Image (cartoon, rainbow, N blue to C red; front, side, top):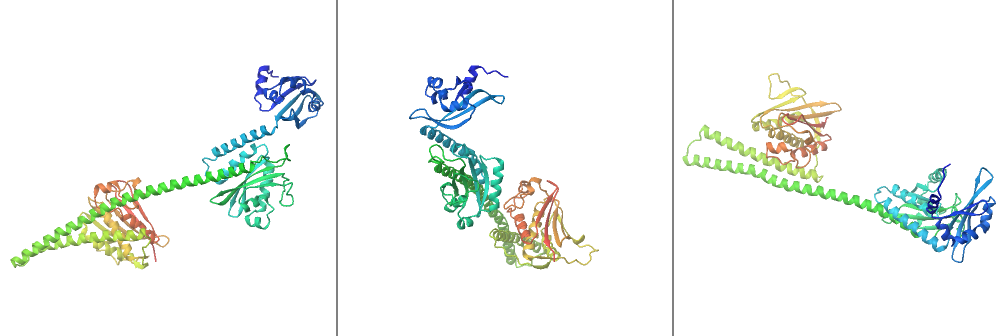
Length: 552
């Protein structure tokens, strides 16, 4: 047995908020704490008067006394519990007297302190909570700290169904029964209007706190668990009920004749409002974060558009400058020929044709850029209409590739269909196969032109550019454009279909480009029920762009 020193025992007893007195089996006071001395007014009273109290005599006789009110004087009333301690089964060794100041002023002050502490804890516990269930659960867990409360409960309202969240202050068996009964009842607002016998639903119906005395209102409310009283408060967000908090009491009225302190309704209302404010604050913070993200995205897009407008102006200016220069050259040559009244020689004619070809190419560049801008604008506004019909993809690609041949300087264009080379033509070339897809001819031609322009632009050192068409499983047709150009870094691949995006190595190789080509190809491919995929083994190793179409 461990011996406790007298000083240690005194420190232990003084750590209790209740008054503690220990008496021997002969009724002599053995020890007591400071709170007991305050409760019984004096040390003299404890030694002389305490052993003579009837409650102490009952304890010395082996009878436990629980919660007996003893009036010490006109101002002070103690709630006393006397518990005999035994050695073995029948020998009383000492009696412990536990006193609790039940004076009204003390009780009110103590209960107010607990209520304030609960409010503080609820504010701290729910500060970072985002889910309504968790917020309700945390607040309900604090409610049994109130002396007048036997258990706290929480519900969530989902559509018109009341979902039980938690019950605290009751055993697991009681919680299971409570939860099962509520789920089986399928409580909802419609039932509340028809059968307002449920106190929970009455609270939801009124959308305001309700305090119920089940003893006085036994004919008005269902009470399967024989409660004495309860308070229920709705949790509202934006004027709409989203949950419910409640405190319930199974014990009879206290010595003052009440179930709950007068401010209990206000306390539960404040906790319900605190819960809703926490959820509203979390939702507001989420919205602010979302708005900030949207603002950042808008700012990024604005910067992209500003850069794009500058780039577009530069892109349009270059071919216009070339056209103006070539036009001036043509005018001078024609004027000189007319002035000399001489026939144009072959060399002069070749120069004129070359200038006209340059004008035609630059005009085509401008037309392509304008078409890209117009189509992109329609896509962004969701106003692009596709004229879907059955068409021969092989013939369409062949026509588009042939129109690019005059522009090719360093590269060789190859066109293969199902493994058969169509361009450049070979002696072994057989009849060109027919592969039909469902699509918009103008938009598909625009997609092919964008991919070919990319391949030519980013293959500065030449090399073959291969266009391939082949049928795939599931009635799909795949069009691929493969080049041996600058290639693409792995981390860049996912960004290539974003508006205005241009890879770093692409900007270094060519200042041309609006950063809209692949974005437009991807959007048009999706509009055709397919998709664009991009592959590259890395910088300097070329790239492959694949589009799938629905076959006919």
